[in-house]
Length: 481
Image (cartoon, rainbow, N blue to C red):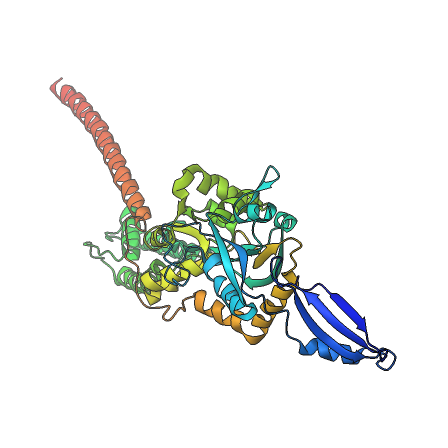
């Protein structure tokens, strides 16, 4: 078998040796005999350099003589599978992106594939592996024609020769608008500026009351002055004309001040309406946010969410994924579509997500996407049955593929790169009911306050009218008497 050393030596009449190496390319192959040294004199060649040179010149072990290698692969989404070379399909990337390396090995080592196709890679349950790993366990296959996650329990039945593929899985979402997570109508000014505005209103009110007290005939009383100041700060006019120039000058100063304050406030509101928030910076923030969540429908996604030890990821799975059952596991087209249309977070392979984003998102929409890593996937490697005689041979040829750039080239072909944010300031967000909810609340409070004030006034005037009527009746009776 390859990488076994059996040397047969024959002593010549001249006390030199004829050395022959015997091996088989596979168990049922014919026995190959190769002369590695003739007239070999160990006494002359102390360090065996002649033997080493002859062995290096013989490139015999890389020819497996057409051996039909028992090989296992997995297709977890057969309804989407149209062939190993279909790059438009993002399903089963771990199989299709690694098959070119197996194909190169076939040409390099001169073997064929006796392929067994299964529906999953396989995990260990009750001491038994399923899928491809189960085939390794019962030693019915020799090589894995796919890349599998390097998990500790899989080392019991398979060896991983080389890392060929690294697939990242992240949560993709859009930051919720600032107007959803905060009251944007109080954000333009800091607490100090709001305090200065109210202090300014109080100073103007006391000044107008003082002018009223120092003069006679001024129409602005305490109530009229307060209503005028509040209306002016909101850019409302007044139908009462002041009597004195001092009051007029004070009113002009207040109107000019309120104009600049309101201009700054309005400009800030417009900017805040188009600004995304920074409310979600971790998985814990995502759990506490109003965003819904879904996961790409992969076998390892279900496993790793249940095995994770991160408390935030456990809480995410328990609160936002598990309650929805199978509906939480979506295809990339549907998941990324919901990210675009709704307040939704979708966790999936970046390769699949980037492909859908490139096809469906406008350049300015790409800039609004954010990523969080919830589960960290181990690298993918090509497995071979535990203790295989071909392990070292195949490992060396895979290392050669990495050194000459074959692995890098196929990774660039199969892995979609992240879309670039080309114009962050393009586009706009429409203002909806959610953004205006605080104004509607304030309007409702205003209606209720006005109604309560009206009822209080009517009650007060009704009481005053009764008192006036009673007093008038008493005076009339006294006059009649």
